[in-house]
Image (tube, rainbow, N blue to C red; front, side, top):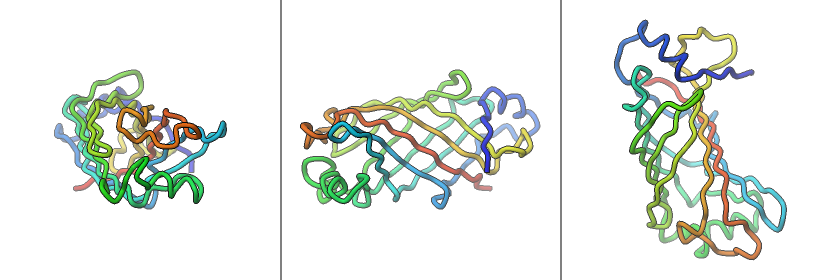
Amino acid sequence: MGKFLLSLSLLFAFAASAAAVPMNYAFDHSDSDVGFTYEFDGQEIRGKFPDFSGELVIDFQKVLNSTVKVTINTTTAQGGFVFATGALRGPKVLAVDQYPEMHFVSRSARPEGNGAIVSGELTVRGVTRPVELAVTVLRDEGTDPSERDNLILRATTSLKRSDFNADGYSDLVSDTLNIDIRARIRRVK
């Protein structure tokens, strides 16, 4: 099924027809992917975090009021292949026995281009650092332009593993992780 970019400015244009209140959304795990890519021995590898939960509030009239809180279960992290998964969960990278969760909490959001920049704090291995996510909202192709009950949130950023003391195997694995989140979100009424 095709997707259609739904810019936040377009959403603002239709906000007058809806209640002027922030809207709560839930993640649809059956159609969401919290993924990342990294270089392993010169090759790009894709991993993912299949188990996550969170709260998402979007204010389409005033994006500054939008918030997101996400918890990721690190014990189910997948590194792209068996060896990488074991190393990723092990004490030199995520140390899942000691740190079974990662957390992201937004602190601000601002419109930018066809989306928004969501700034917040990411906590990995007990280390909290600021992170900015480039976020866009999409809707299914062919849906009404005012559709806001069933959307797709796309968020991307890059970060350095070493900033979170998750820098094991640096001779084989790049320090930079490219985060690519595609989450189906459904309005909670």
